[in-house]
Length: 159
Image 1 (spheres, rainbow, N blue to C red):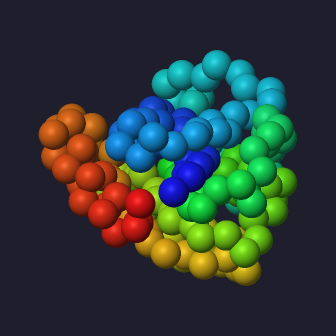
Image 2: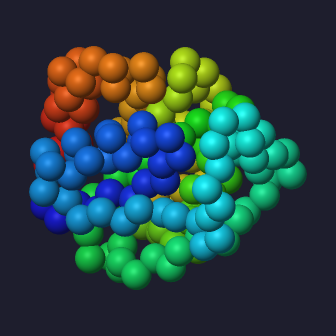
């Protein structure tokens, strides 16, 4: 089964999960990036991220070159910001225009998933969502636990 993983990661948590999925599934990967990404740190990083959520901002992202129709499964991952998918990732979904695909979704958060997965599934109407999962960012402090959770999730994907 040919698999594509597309994700956005702000603090590295979503990238960690995507990397584990990639190695377990031998999948192709597309990392969503901001076109104009300033290096932010400390409180400025947090305030910028939270300023993107109100008003459903859609910052410009890098081009998506993959052809979703060439994949049997697409796995999509995003961090959770204020209980929602990161606006950067929603920008990607707006541009990628997935339709009629078999999709699995995941999110990474610090303990507040909110309704991020529901919003992702709504944004992906017209596709078949076969599985969903959420990963608490603190899990990266216990890599064995995270790896096992990812491994167990891959069993639900039919790969």
